[in-house]
Length: 366
Image (spheres, rainbow, N blue to C red):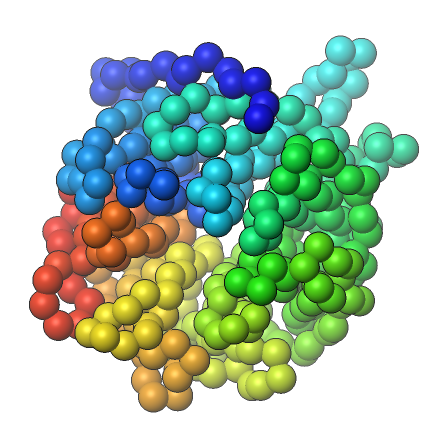
């Protein structure tokens, strides 16, 4: 394990006037091995963490501040071992006075405890440092064996990958191809040990498929689909099978798509930003739950049968506004939990209530 940094310092409410937090990307609501949820958000100079004080809440501790110098974007990824990985894009002035843009990595091994120190993993353009200024924000996924995969759009508009094996050894950057990509790809770790991934592009959609657990990636397949940039999400919906979701520029709502099939409209209306997605049982049925920010800033919550989208997808508009995409997870009691960052920069939480269907509690400030 890596050397741990000093424990994060608390910030009082008096120190948090105004917009203190911004939504992160990826798995920014995580369930620890002890059954407690943690949520993470971006703030000036680093990130903030809140942690449930008991399994199922409702109380939370925090926020705890974790410094991250010159952070511009933050992505959170959690593996099957429940370790939480943090990938930050940094834009700073180096020791020689020149601009340096790279990716930094830290880990939280246990719920509520200290992070490791941040360590830089560079960028794909180590031989041409000025091109490194053009890298996109990181995306990340953790394979079943604990291998961390970090993806960035490179200066040429394609996709680059760097992997860290479970023992902490980093491999060299790999060029996965693609052209005209959106700023951030969408990877998903599958139960088989493989990864699948998609990215919006000027020409539509690129999809990458890992050949085998720990193996290389096939050349990307291109599809002429109408994706709104920055809206793609993914989850495993069958054995070794991913479903990708995005906002469709032509239909004005959400669609679901699996390779080899046609996009299925889910409705939901226009969307700003990405999606929180979760696969969970509801009334004894295997369901896919989707949360997003509508055009007017309010939260939309949808649900339908997993891989049975043609049977219908049901949406409700929740009486709350947010910035960025909401996050979804199941708590230690198996209830669906939604967290968002409100327009003032404070996190709010709602939990699944007892009864048929998917009914959420009133919102409470974390």
